Length: 286
Ligand code: HEC
View: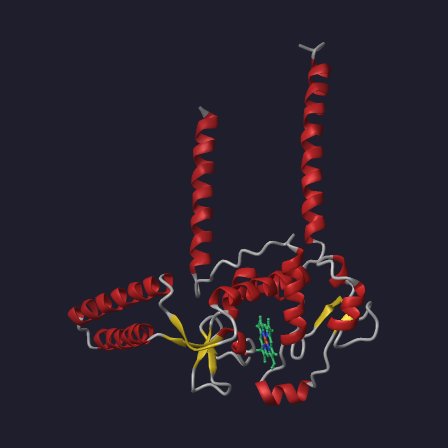
């Protein structure tokens, strides 16, 4: 009886924790799923190459050494030295760059951050979504904005690959509808106009729902000028890039996972052993 009550309480507690985690996770923009495969070396190699060619000029990976490109992704040392080492002299050097901080501040308004740990801070899904969320916006200095990172200071470096991404007319229409409804609700509230609040809230909720559906149906963005890659190919480039950044954040991840498996197997074996030992000890006492 007591156990039953305890499990019920435990169940309720877990449900509450689960719900609060959901609520926390629901805040902010939704992200797409990166679906990276840490053990896929080809993907890591492609990601490393994209990084060195497109990102290193602005973002260092200073907590990582060039020889880590040999260890995990399995790129042969001579290829790293001849094709991927744009900075540094020896393969044991850290992956730095020569971007002058003052100039960067002037150009971008902010110094581009080091990205060694960005995957641990932001998560793979966030990074994947970020690289797919740049869109044309004439009001910004580089002509682009980012739905996941509002008023971002970074130009869309991969635009030649992805093409020019714009919001669809339907997306713009729904967003302005939401914006207007939001203002109308505030005005109606101020005037104590309950009917107005109800009316504009309904419009607000309907448009918000429609916008979520539009995003879900991939009707939020479209490519107005094609890049050199198809959408599918671009997704792969970004996925590989994120896979590489995930590796940079924790180069020992593969080892850790393999070791974790061994530890669990050992504990299971040890448990059986101790169980029989216990039985043996208690046999004479009972
Ligand atoms: C021309 C310089 C430049 C290049 C090249 C560049 N970035 Fe950036 N990036 C920036 C700047 C500047 C910021 C800071 C934006 C801000 O805070 O408004 C930034 C921010 C970021 C962030 C957000 C970091 C955070 O958590 O705040 C990520 C992730 C990122 N860049 C990834 C990349 C990747 C991946 C590449 C290569 C495909 C790349 N960047 C190439 C300039 C650049």
